[in-house]
Image (cartoon, rainbow, N blue to C red):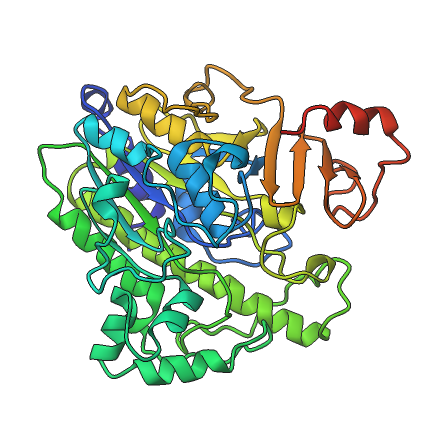
Length: 443
């Protein structure tokens, strides 16, 4: 693994040359990564050297939401650059409409070699990826890639006969039966035992190998785009024996009455080492870009499709409008990106507009996304006045301080995230003018 100093030094070279041609895009999109589970959080003991190095040579956004905190809707919003209400994937029971244009298609038209691997999640309803993971890649706008199922979908669809390339690999290696049996024991988050799978068959490690293979095969005479969709740190809390670390203590969930403190700590230990394993894989993939001599001309983005409640408010997973669920991490580095951190409001869908901007492509039809390039280059410190997120029955709007929610838990909710970042005190009856101002901004 290259040192942090080498990482920073190599990224700073041949800057003038990098500006003379279209940049490459390397996009890391894990599944269910909390916005606060990042380097620099003094309350969360994490070992994330590669994300730390990425943040050191780029810009970290502190106030970011996904358009919808659920896998398929969030990824549909990202693909189209649209807010939830117009992306036409209201839940995981819908496939992405092939009539809708994607930013992957637009990059292809601009001459990009578009690649993807991992859990793309654009046909969530139809649990069939093809054993080669190629079923709808061309239709979505990918030149090359391997689409695989998420953790639960892989077992649910392929326990007997594999429907995706990951379960196909486990079946070929004689590991599928043990993996399926193990998942049957993981109905709840408190199942924190180690997986019977060896390291090389662990899904995120397998995805990383696919990513490195795609980079090695990518043509040298074209700009490229690669999105790496890790399946972790999504539940279940499965980790390999080499990943296990029971030495660290984590803060208890906020307003939680489920499980005792040691159980919550084990859950958070597993979640953390899943994040750390992804960090290691990110370092390996970035190193492949360095070996190609293309690091200086590559924009690197790290984010997530949504967050993870981890027991806060007695909730797990996503689906809900609390920050731990709808909030996401965002780090951008490379090219002319300034270094530091920003409180500029950003949405996950803004990555769509940012890539199109750097590629010199026009916006997509009905696109709500806005390019982050002015903030990345230091030309602006503001980006949006409000952020939105929604899912089926509820909607929210956030102005960077106050967040208003309608349609959740049976009553409107207003939180002052500066004074109450854990969202424990509903101010809707105490600050009626603020609530009404934000209510009018809901979409």
